[in-house]
Image (tube, rainbow, N blue to C red; front, side):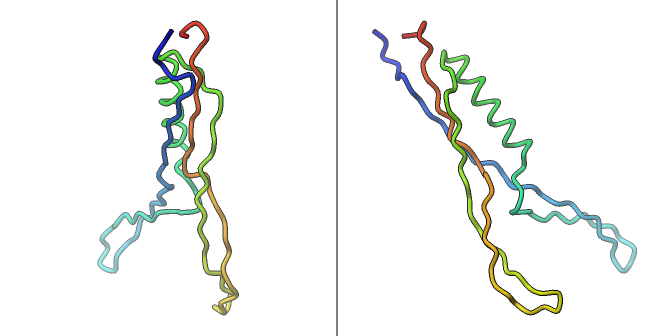
Length: 108
């Protein structure tokens, strides 16, 4: 009989997208400005981390049986075009996942 667990989990968060903007200064200098976009996860980062988790579990003799999204909520102020504040808009994005894996039958 094996000491290995039948089910195991791991989890991770991914970074948010970063918007890059080129700004030209008054004296002609060029500057690159980076701004975090909290409305969008970096899908490449999320995908790469998920692939890494799947491959790691496969090497260890486990099959992934579930992926549970981790939602992160936030809100933003909403203003009319004239600048009048009208309230908050709430939303959430998937910032990470919990990966659940089960030991393969041949590894019991």
